[in-house]
Image 1 (cartoon, rainbow, N blue to C red):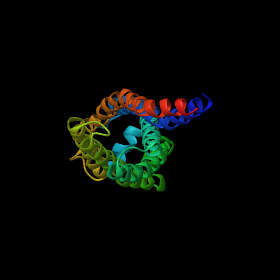
Image 2 (image 1 turned 120 degrees about the vertical axis):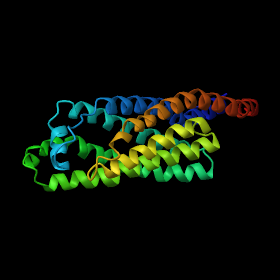
Image 3 (image 1 turned 60 degrees about the horizontal axis):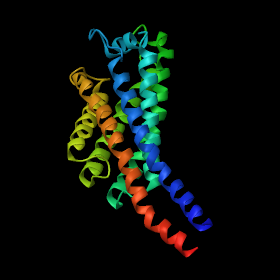
Image 4 (image 1 turned 30 degrees about the vertical axis):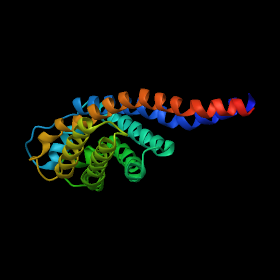
Length: 236
């Protein structure tokens, strides 16, 4: 009996990372969708510096980016949990490992992005300050990498059915690519700004995959552990 209890505890701890990943993806998806929905816009007039200043002084800057920061933090935590939990297959595990690093870096980048509004006064006259340069590089490098990472994870997980299926694959792929392209070009042109609403598909992908994954992981974990527990109980 003691052996059975000990094995049960070990299995429960092993499955815990997988069980928390689903809810984290759901929370992250909801926060990403909400943050994007209330993201401040600009008039589309003047230089890109002036347009950024319009957004930085908007009252919705902090609420929007606080939600986006929460989203990226939840995504990072969920991906790290999946990586720790294992059971993804060699291909998906490799992708997850790379994506986990990008997700953590993107969370740090979004933290900087959130507080970029503190430098709004410096660019009020259209001057490209150091903080503006940091903001530009952050948006054109870190955010696109995060979008591409989500797209890659959606494809790997969908094809192997470890994270969703081919239908959810399309949601994550389109949303991730849209976010990557729009973010990479926003500091230079307005041409692809219309893709940002399409990037909300990332949030939908995360919610759907998270809801699918949680009960599935719980069922598969319980089914796999039952024979081992029976044998452990019998051997004792």
